[in-house]
Image (cartoon, each protein chain N blue to C red):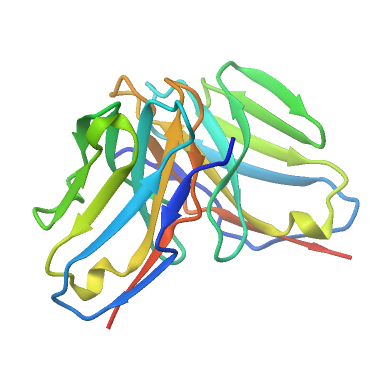
Length: 112
Length: 113
């Protein structure tokens, strides 16, 4: 069990650029979740995959955000035309079925 | 808006004391309750899960759940300086069939030597 892996750990980009983050869940975890956390707040749910199917998206996930999980393994989260308000820690979690979620180390996004 | 409320703290306790962390939630449909520990700059780490009313003990940690009062707590016995962190309470969104978690803002715990 190698844990949930997220890359990159830190991304610095200019406003208006596109960024993509990757999450590799714990092996055989069929459920994968994306959350966003800003300073002083708890994580906020963004989206959820069961295998390759994206089953729910939060209203927080504007049209500039897209997530995929091809083949039900790793997942990517892309943000297009980044804005200052997108600066946050993006957390990925996975679980086997309806079991507790385990989080990766996150990707910290900084928008200049 | 489903809410999870926690006192932001900091909660300061001396080493060896019992730390008591509390959480209330608004969604009566919630069935799963979790405590995560988060060190500064790190990701949340699962400490406890609880699904039924009553107490659940794991080592120095005890989670308590009272669904009627919509109240969850975490007790940390024999607190250590290494327990100093932010503790996040999370409950599942009872509307969904999966574990969509709603988090509180966390309680910062400081354990002094």
